[in-house]
Structure formats: C-alpha cells, structure tokens
Amino acid sequence: MKKILHSAVLSAVMVLSAQSAMADVTVSGDYLKFGVGNNGSLIDFTTFTGLQYDPTGTGTFTSATDFLTPGSPFAFYSIGVGGSSATASVYGGNPFGSSTADFSLSGTTYVATSGGTYNGLKITQTITFDTTSNIIHTNVVLRNTSSATLNNLAFAVGFDPDQDSNSYGTSDTDNKILSQGVGAAVQATGLFTGYTVKLSSTGGWSGNAGVYGWNTDPYYLATAVTGNSYSDDTISLGYHFDSLAKGKEISIGYDLTVTAVPEPETYAMMLAGLGLIGAAVRRRRSA
Image: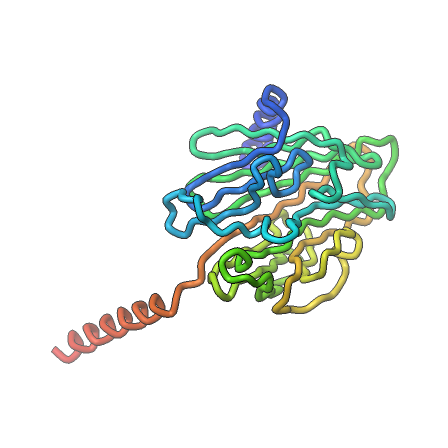
C-alpha cells in the first residue's frame, strides 16, 4: 500500500510539474520557509531564500533566521558514476539539466525536480513538506537508463549551516554525528540561537554522516571518517552503491528537521513542574 501511494504521488508530481513553470521555488509553512533552485539544490536565488525557521509556528518569517544564505551560501547534492562526479549547487550550476516546479495538495506541498540525467542515470527528486511541520522529506530516485550495468555509483547531499551568523556574528556551529549506517544522521546547533538542523537518512540504505569543510565529492562523502566539531563546517550524508543493473533504480530518502533547544528558563519551568508533580504524588501516598 505504501509503495502504491508513493508511486501515485510521484506520478502526480511529475504530471503537474510538467504543467507548471520550471524555476526556483520558495515554499512556506507554519515553522519553515525554504527555497529550492531550478537545479534541485536548496536555496532559491531568485528570492534569496535558503532555510528559515519560525519557532512560534505562526509562519512569521519577516526577521527569521536563515540557516543557509548568510556569508557564502552553500547547499548541494552530487552524483557519481564510474568514478566521475558532478555537483548541483549555486556554484556548480545545473550539470544534470534538471527542472523544478511545485504544487500543493491538502496542506502538503510537493517540490519536484525532474528531467536530470548523468552518465546513464535518470535523476528524479521529490520533496514532500507538510506545511504544519518542521520536517522536510526528500526522495531521490536514480534510474539506470543506459544499455548496460552501471558500476561504482555515489550520491551525497549537504549544506553549510549558519543559523547564528546574522544575529550573533558567528558562522560556527556545534556539529555532531548522531549515527552511521542505516539511519545515519548528523546535526548542527547554533549555540546562541539554540536552533538545530538535522540531516537523517530514511531510505533504508547504509549512509555515511559527516562533518567536513566545503567538500562535495560524493565518493569522499560516502566513505570518509570524520568527527564532531565546533566550527564553520558543512554537514552531509553520503551513499555508495557497487552497481545498478540496466532498467533498475535506487531510491534514496532523507529528512531535514529543524528544532529549537529550550532556553534555560524553559528547563527551569520544566523542572519546577516535575517537582510540583512529585510533591503532589508524595502527598497522595501519605494521605
């Protein structure tokens, strides 16, 4: 049932995308506002929108923090086939010849990037966003449209989070690798704003979560071993696949989640509340 529903949504996205204007798009919800370039990478450079967050959930982004556009904006995805690779980003252009469009249905916005190809691969990306949530779901399908098996494939996605830059003048973030393999995840927290952005693998494939400088090589990002940092680094997910037979496809999924770390006052209120509950329980027991 899940696969049937996914196929139906993907088909609808592709049909409606073909009927929509292909260009950079910006999507706005209660907590998140984000841009997607015509090449499929994050950041709409027509409106200069990267990833903005409103912790109040009221959809107010007039003075919201942007995680991606301060300084030198940086967000990308890259694909490798047979040892060669290319990168879609603001700096890498549109090497796959992709086009992006969006449409909304029942409170959910779909951003479809289609038509991309690279060395025998057809590339289709679908971003699904519930406008009431703080999570952006992305699914990338790589299909072998060549006449033979493709070997040594890689995919990577990442960005440079700068959520403390505009308000506090620092591009450093507290970057932590949370897990590796299936369910790989990495996050970056702005210690001044308290805002955290997390990349987590959801598609069932073994991924490599990393903290790096501005490296977009999918082969490196799929295998390199790195550690945590407090610096101006990128966070990323990388995947490697030995081969893909003719006519077959790989479906890669990952989520981008934005949250706010509670302020000290909030922690104090929570602890005080727990204390009151504990006192009430003790009074009942002694009664």
